[in-house]
Amino acid sequence: MKYHIRYNKSAGEPLRGTPDHKWRVFEDGKEYLFKNFKVNVPCHNEFAYGEWNLACEGVLVIDRETSTAVINNIP
Image (cartoon, rainbow, N blue to C red; front, side, top):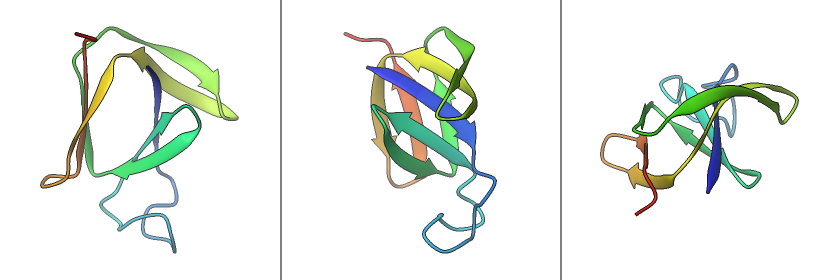
């Protein structure tokens, strides 16, 4: 699966997560908000969704306890 990661400029606003939810992760157009992210695969910059993003391919693992998106290699 392909992912795009971008800074959440509207963190803390209504429906945009808490002020600590600084990262937006897009998966096929679906958006997730996280406090942290870790990318364990190669990545590159890519223009998508109207802005520049960090782009990578892998599998998203969500750590809800720490609000962290982890993108790992495809098994």
